[in-house]
Image 1 (cartoon, helix red, strand yellow):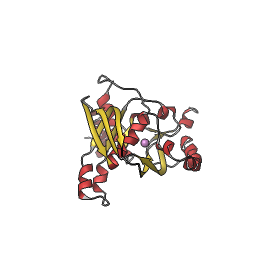
Image 2 (tube, protein in one colour):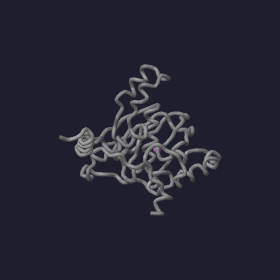
Image 3 (tube, protein in one colour):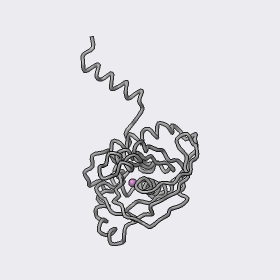
Image 4 (cartoon, protein in one colour):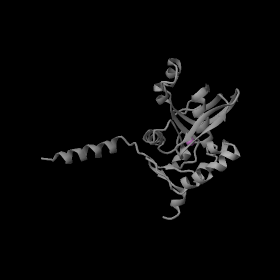
Length: 217
Ligand code: NI
């Protein structure tokens, strides 16, 4: 008769075999993949559904609200967003909270067609740049064309925080990081911290891959 720990082992084993979700290491600041203009993909992209699931899992494990494919080392035009945590933010009105509920989307081959309005500041962070948060100025409203996970094309207009999350993730597929958008003075002030991140000299509670440490292997 199997012991209790044997049963527990079996359950874990079966779960990881059936549910194929896997947490991927997030690429840290300084890796060249974050600087590439990402390439469009086609519906035949190998194991696309698994990749999408893994990206969501990876993002949740790091408590993120958006994650772009270059951040898991793939220079392809895809990012995932789940803004649901904002639906519980008590600083928001019930109408705003409603907007974030179930906002879980995959953006493939996205192109921002229009950005409109007067720039506003919002405090941004990035899973590839842990512990650095800065106010970034961007336009409040965007119109974006993209394909969903079934490769159906959409053209939609978003504003406020949702537009902001999309702009940040979209920038990743263009090789742009939020720190690029800061003033020269701000950039100079965080230079040392950015360099520490790329060397892995940082405490972070999710799985990461550091460019400077890769070379040593
Ligand atoms: Ni980011």
